[in-house]
Length: 96
Image 1 (spheres, rainbow, N blue to C red):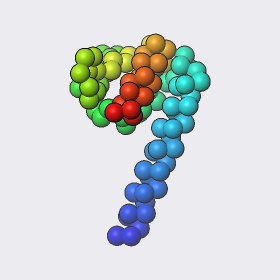
Image 2 (tube, rainbow, N blue to C red):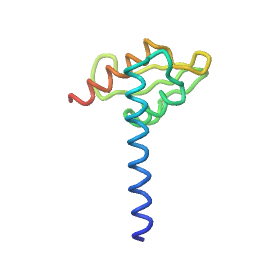
Image 3 (cartoon, rainbow, N blue to C red):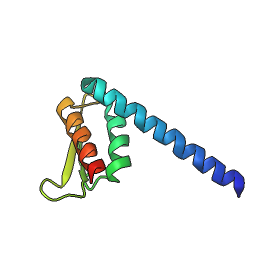
């Protein structure tokens, strides 16, 4: 049991380190973000997408107004303006 808890703690720490590394890349170079990395960040902060049709993924956010984040793949990368929108939504979420 203790080994399992230890393994889970390590896995969570590795995931958080990975998310933080992706966030830093998103801030430094929004044009160079892999769509799969953008999805990892969105899944972490917003949960599973409510829609995953085609190249789009739509995530719910916890506030009124525009209660979603929409991302899509363009040749395997996230669109830079959407990467910036995700960063803004994460900032807004952390301020709540």
